[in-house]
Amino acid sequence: MEAKAKLFGHPIHQALIVFPLGVLATAVIFDVIHLITGNARWAEISFWMICAGVIAGLVAAPFGIVDWLGIPGGTRAKRVGLLHGVGNVVVVLLFAASWFMRRENPMAPDVLALVLSFAGGGLALITGWLGGELVNRLGIGVYDGANVNAPSSLSGRPARETVRS
Image 1 (cartoon, rainbow, N blue to C red):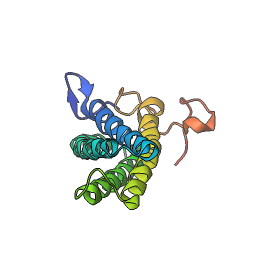
Image 2: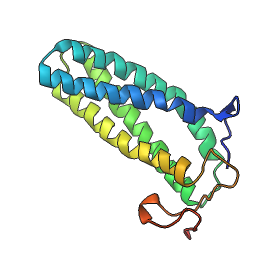
Image 3: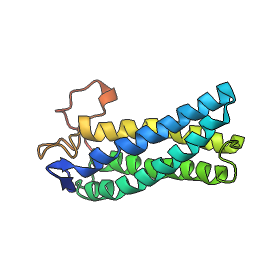
Image 4: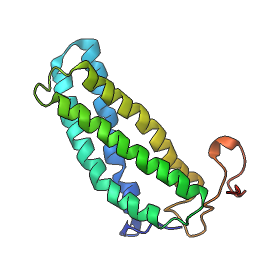
């Protein structure tokens, strides 16, 4: 099935998600650099990257919801999409909490703020894979002939097969 929310013929959600994923992943990397070097500037940059990533995630989310609502019910794609969407809400909440905890002193984040950032980054790897599964394996947002019940890419089975619900 093709994406329901498009701009210039391309799915809006798929175009927008690169921003929160990239910015939030970079924030995690900068937190690691801060921990390794002790340079507080990296923590401050991470603070602003998290702010931008949370905003970008909130901008991308409504377009994902529109596309998810267009997936036929009772399909593997609908279930994977739900996990992807709910998981990404948790990712944004983890990073938002990390950002909130840092706001008093962005150059010296608490351990919990860093843990939340790392947890959000780890979960984003999983939700990003689920998004890739939706697009690359199930064809969601790509073409009308999508196999919304294709088996998992981890199964080793061809995408043309159908998983019975």
